[in-house]
Amino acid sequence: MSPIIRILLGAALCTVAGPVHAQEDSPLKPIRGFGGGGITIASTVGDFSDYVGTGWGLGAHFILNLDRQGILGLRTDVGFINYGNETKRVCLSQTVGCRIEVDLSTSNNIFHGSIGPQLTLPAGPVLPYANASVGFGYFATTSNVSGVNDADDQFQTTNFDDVTFSWQFGTGIRVPVHYGRTPIHLDFGGRYNANGQVEYLTKGGITDHPDGSITLNPILSEANLWTFLLGASFGVRW
Image (tube, rainbow, N blue to C red; front, side, top):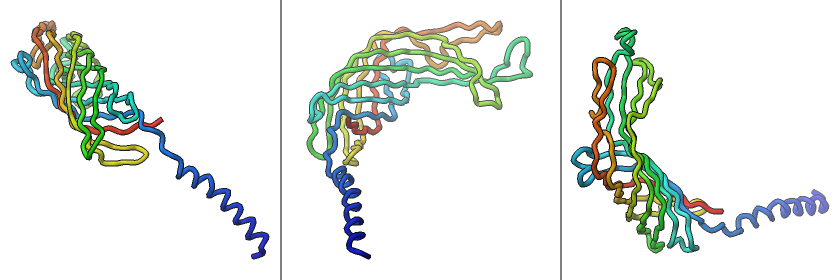
């Protein structure tokens, strides 16, 4: 190979490798927050526990860091909790009769959202945190029907609902399991949810009559509960 070709090849390699090397050495952008979610287990307390047992759900959160160390943050949570379900097979209508049967399913859920400050101790292999927030709880009971051989819901109705102001306080720990460009933390936490007095339906709270009419039997009580999160959080940079 001639010296001129060797010089040209060397220059080309330097041109390609230069930007790559510079990109690898460029500093990572700071972590601006953590987003994630997980499974929620709900444990009712007080008057609520007289009518409702445990529940389950899913939740998502985002924590915006308000300082470079990630000590003070603004946390937003959304999610839902299911605290009761029932399904029974019924005739489609009085006109059609039982020649066509459908599955009538009723679900009792709480949809919630909140926002508030969070303090995190960013030191050591475990990151403990504590938070407080205000938000809302939307209690809704819905019914839907689907064909016996068809899993798709055909019709859905909200039978009863109520909205309440709520406040929360909680604590937990994040355990880093991955570092680098996208940090990953396991997230274990518990929150007390004070919903105050709410009207809601429970399993068996709707009475069906032979003429097709129904009677709703709502309960009025405090609806406070603890929620426990088993999830993960992912670092966000920009």
